[in-house]
Length: 333
Image 1 (cartoon, rainbow, N blue to C red):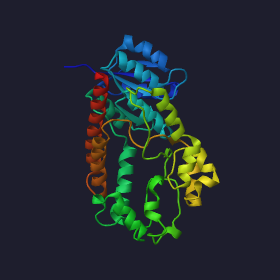
Image 2: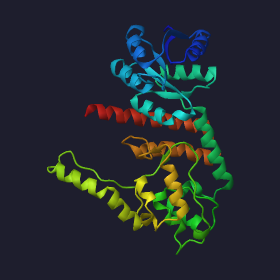
Image 3: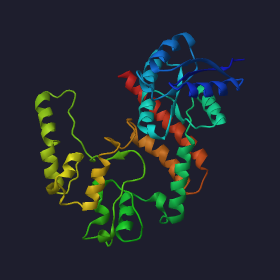
Image 4: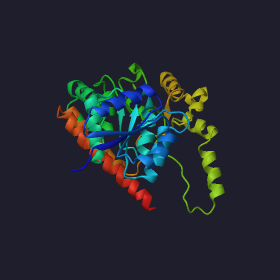
């Protein structure tokens, strides 16, 4: 019979460490093997303690949780890291998962959910935060009760057409293609549409295209200069004035560059640029289509009123497999 699961706590707040330690001592199958108050100490102690699971705070002075996670897993890949976070740490969560953390939990997690997450991690399974399931159910219920029939099978062109014809009260879309829904020549709601940021604390304003330079480019310097010119502020402003939105937030402050956009949309995009803006709008993985399929299954289950928890757990397992496959492929390079 195997012994208890060896757990190592890393958090710069002594009170948090004491609370987690008390919880672990109450579970006979979980064993507290040590504590650290910062990432550097965690890396040092990990070699001696050899834990099965690390409960890793992400925000710490000196060496943070992401750096510590990356260092620990590079030396002891059998260790599983669970990131501990708060609502304001979503970007750090993404970075922690990219660094190799198996899953994340909010710091207000219940004792039983934390215990189950530790047991799951010991078996190599990630845990989906309860808040993610609640969000799926909330938006699924909204679409099922108030959305158009057949919404799960609709492509974005059909959604845009419904909104443009006045058959939907609101529509979520990338600012880059807003005109599909509010083209004055085709839309009956163009003059009635207002614009607002999507709720949340992360905002995305990126074009749907990009420029890159191949690894075997013979004239790398010339190619780099072309990219600088094509993506520069002056060219971005010229293209934006012609109706092609750009990703440079500074250009939205140039009146001449915004003549093709509704003033309120310009204002919303500009305000997003002063917040927690990201330069990407999907997980930083190679197999995007696979990941989209897994997550889509959970969304469809939520809209159809199915078992959201079961669908989310299945999607989480599939998404985790995609991350692991991508990581393995990257390591072979």
